[in-house]
Amino acid sequence: MSEPSTSPAIPAPPPRLRDAWVALAGLSAVFLFEMLDNSVLNVALPTIARDLAASTSSLQWVSGAYSVAFGGLMLLFGAISDRFGRRRIMLVGLTLLAVVSILTVFVTSVEQLIAVRALMGVAAAMTTPGSMALAFRLFTRDDLRVRALTVISTAGLVGLAAGPTIGGFVLAVAPWQVLIVANAPIAVIAFLGIRAGIAADRRADLHRDPIDVVGAVLGTLTVVGVLLTPTLFVAAGGAGIEDAIGAGTGVVLPWAGWAAAAVTVAAAVAFVIRERTAHHPLLDLRLVAHPLVSSGLAYKAAAGLAMAGLSYLVTLQLQFAWGWPPALAALGTLPQVVALLASGRFVGPFVAWVGLGRAAWMSAAAVVAGLAVFALLGRYGYPWVVVALVFVAAGMRVVGVVAGNNVLRGLPENRTSVGAALVDTASEIATAVGIAATGTILAALVGAGIATTAFTPDGLAAFQNAILVAGLTITALAAALVAIGIRRSRRTPSVPPTIQEPSHV
View 1 (cartoon, helix red, strand yellow):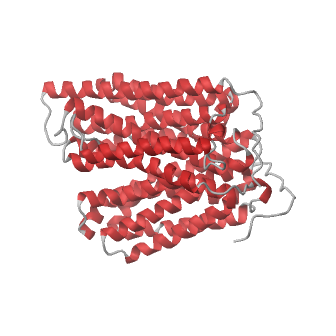
View 2: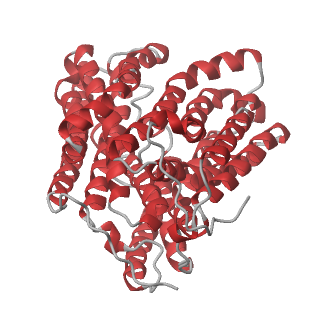
View 3: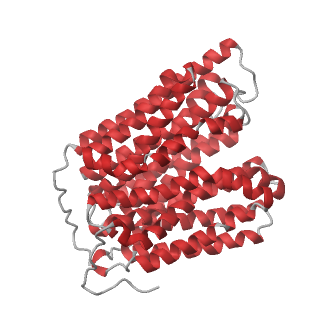
């Protein structure tokens, strides 16, 4: 791979979306990998467990190792990309992804598979934030940026929707290893598209600050702690509702979970102190405080929080309260997938109509409203569940594009990769918090055994009340984040100011 260009010439940005189709195809393949990989693998977990004689806890780490590596390392690789080249780091990550995916054919134990999944998480941390940063930098007009991000996200949503079906058909005729090895050709397509369609970063668009190793360790430890702590509560909690919703048992929580929570809080505090005092911080908190950045992150976190809460609550409502079998429950969530895919063509016109600022808070508010509808009315029939799913899907379709675009607009040119990583990290953390909070509330109000015990009328009433409390609690938290985002966005000038960075060379 070539070095970042030293030429002072600046390539003219593509005037139309179709003029950058090669680059967009490559970037779309990156997002397709992220979404398709997770949804396909979930279908294969029972088969993997039988083939590798994996225990329940080991099987959990087949998915968990990927998520922890992905979420924990995004900020670090975002910072590295801003220093050494966004295109370069993405191409290295895609190469790693292709090689590791092929190594799956040699896996003979669950421990080896967990190692492979962890390395795939590292590759995802190198590539996924870069897809947003490179798409943003490919164009200079906001309308083209929004449309480009919409195209990329559509590819991922197609993978998310089609993943379970594809996985089921493949498992009927081929071994489960094929599902992971299939990431290799996707990585090759992404590599070729990005290599041919996106120019190497110019040195003027990068910076050469020393990497804040201490900040990177503390930041990674914080994010890993947030993602890992709920898992520790589950592992020590035993069977029952914990297995279904990812929470601890009742009021007394295991010491391992509390210890992880304490370490996470300590690491978070130390990270903030470090970033406020370091001469070359990994994440300059002054930039995070910029209204466009802070408001975009608040909207993204609110949407992720509400989406996570709704996903768990709808699954429990359909299967446990109403007795739907898993296959029927999967079909019950289909309106959300349809709304996600069908609403893509309306994102650009909607943003052009109301503006970027209004689109951001309105879409985040729609996601929160969808959760509120389910919490208050979901028990009264499936049509209300459909309304909630459609509200959330339409809101997520817009906020996922607009909030990220706003964050990158508020950052200097040489900080876009760490900004994209920050957006993805905020979403990952919000999802983990939403799952943990929802599960903990339900476990505390209903107790264990929900997955194996038939409901009495009183038990069903208690369960529905628990869903109401959990839903409204998450709704309140997400609504508070939307309010914070609105308040912060009001401080944004009509033309975002250029943030001057101190000289680091």
